[in-house]
Length: 326
Image (cartoon, helix red, strand yellow):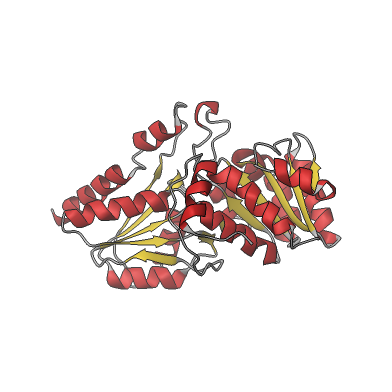
């Protein structure tokens, strides 16, 4: 099993989410002889080149055919294999949505659908390759678990937990190369259990994926302005850790959700749906990608353009709090 420490965290950061996914699967392959990894002609792009060379009998490239891949994955799972199936986020979540709904959600097959390049990390490839609504689609399918790891160390934790998990799962990989590290030592990771990274009584930022790092930066900037901001890593979008939301609502005057996903249907919607049934709950600010198709661009430029960097997240929160006082 890969060890999480400061040295490894720095190296893994340079690999990025896709490269680290490949390393994590390779590590799992050593201990799970029933593992089967599938790709829709994106083995190298998914960081799986070493895995397919090391375990050629446990790797299948089905070609550019995500719908067939999910059907084959379900069949292999039915025969007892522990299956990971990978492709770019929009292709696996939407091109194969019906197959995931019927063969994984409805049949509850033990397949982990892994989306590489979620959010806008595919940069100049544009909207055809952006995963801006994938979590919303997958979250709506009954029996689907949806996980979005915060950094490369959490990708290791997620893959390990997914290999032990029985049932359908969607793993959403955000970020690009040089993913900033959050975890530099081992920690307790459980699917469905959020992790509080920073305490704060004025506002609680609930973040997922690449936005956990940016939210920690935003919390630091807010504290410099006298605003106590807590940060929760909600790595599991479904099932949502409602106990963590309850605690945040009880302790904070404002809930902010931050995600590299559309403001429609993702983490923000999941939190808002739960809060709607609470008798007393603070207001919520949803920060994410806009509900539109925008122009392509370099990854960091897109994050800054859409306000998904620490400084702009902090500014947006401060503006919302000031407006609420009027």
